[in-house]
Image (cartoon, rainbow, N blue to C red; front, top):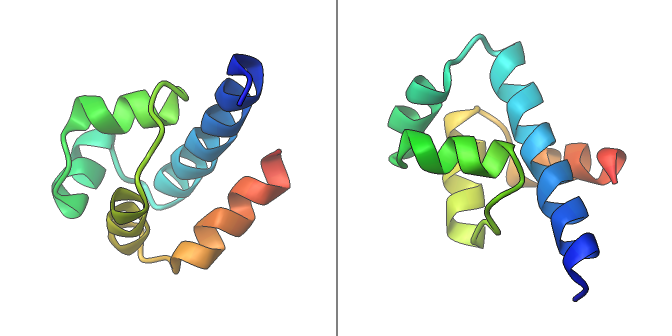
Length: 79
C-alpha cells in the first residue's frame, strides 16, 4: 500500500476514535486504562501514527462502549 494511502487510513481511524472518546468525556489516560493499552499508544493511534491490530481495535471499541462495527462505520464516514 502506498504510504499516502496508509497514512490517510490510519488518520481517519484515529479521528474516529478521538471523536468517540471526546463525546464520552474520556481523557486519553482513561481510554488507555479502560482498554488496557498505553496512553502514548492511544495518542499515536489518534494522530494516525499507528496501524492498529484487530485485537486492539476491539479493546478500544469495548472501552468506548461501542460495537467494533460502529467504530469502523464511523471511520468509513471519514475516509
